[in-house]
Length: 362
Image 1 (tube, helix red, strand yellow):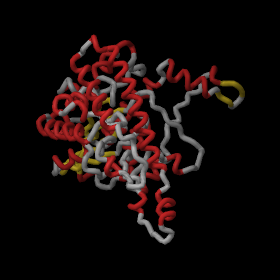
Image 2 (tube, rainbow, N blue to C red):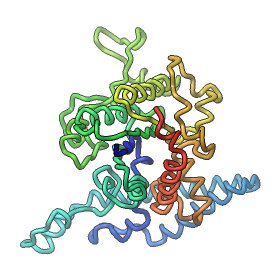
Image 3 (cartoon, rainbow, N blue to C red):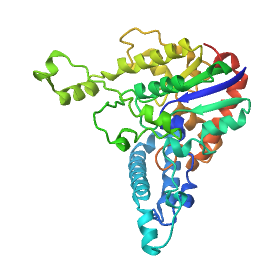
Image 4 (cartoon, one colour):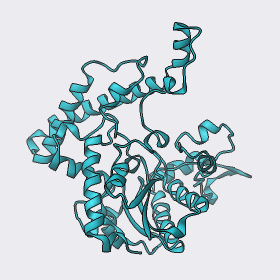
């Protein structure tokens, strides 16, 4: 039976950053340019930060703070530049230059890849490289940048409901759990572009179905009422973060993903995006309480076979520091470059082959 891997998660599992730094050359020729010193500054500062972190130079703490602030500033500048590239009205400019021109759709594309539809077939993402390294295994990436846990799980459910070939595959779901406190709302707003801003799929049918899956995570307790049928949403939202109300929901969605895989006879492995696995396992500092006492399969975390696989972000960073120049690890949006994702793809391919008994286990 042929094998396939279905990846669900956020921007890190999607592969955002895979076109960095090539995107500067691939951006639309009419797009605004980033500051001429930006790239050299970024490489120097991001490289220096990683170097000091690796050496654990305590005497560099104060200087690190300055470097970190500069890195944040440069990253913000980069994100503003990408927004300006996306917001440039290329059609209007081309028509102004030549009223008789008939630009094709490719002539109007910004040239940057940050969302699912643009990264799904881009060869430099770690998942597409993984698929190339495992020719006998189909790799399907359903990840979506910025999405919450329930949205990620809904993506898997939606895919399964549309899948007509499930019986032809032995399926492994690799679930990269997004940050715990991400939260999205179902809305009555019918602005399609707003609804699917974080769900960009090449498959229009799947995209439209996903547009109706939003997490309406408001729980109304008595003190949330401010009148009949009126609720204090502001108070809820504050309590949600201040009192870590999201953590039970986070574990609940991991459990839900496990049950979906069990019901469909899928294998499943999971890790977090950034939260260290040992912190989750031990409930370090009481930040990760499994308040519903759900049967979360901690044994299905890759951390059990490789302590360095503490999270997907940690894996990129650790493998990057071992194999790359430090300045080639982070992309401008604080994701990981195509070079770093290549290292991760090779690691995952080797692990899937040499640790088959772990990965292909229910």
